[in-house]
Image 1: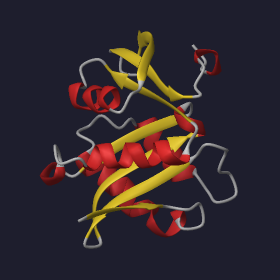
Image 2 (image 1 turned 135 degrees about the horizontal axis):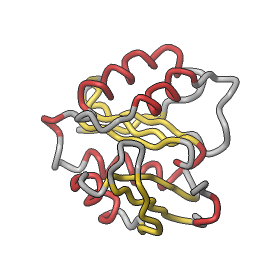
Image 3 (image 1 turned 120 degrees about the vertical axis):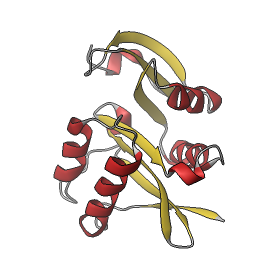
Length: 153
């Protein structure tokens, strides 16, 4: 059975190295260096509103991670262990975030079909197409009380 556990700002220094390692191993090379730097620099004292991080655990084993910085405007990323993909772990993580945040933003490269499928299945809407940090066509997606004007273009 999978349980979703929020990681509080106070817990982050204790588990950060595990999360960063997990993201590097299981993010399929899609988690940017900028996103990992953001996570590495986040401290309990500098957590802006809308920052939310959670882990999916199976028998105390990490099988997934999701993170949002400022509702996803600063950063947003998710990774699920390959052995747990297509089993609802990513959806459980995203839906839990939706239960705690009143709005969500994320950027997804157009060639990242699994992430796009996850976002659309959970009700996120695409509202902008732009050239992402790797030069690929990328979508801005939003959910809840999002407003496209909140993002920097």
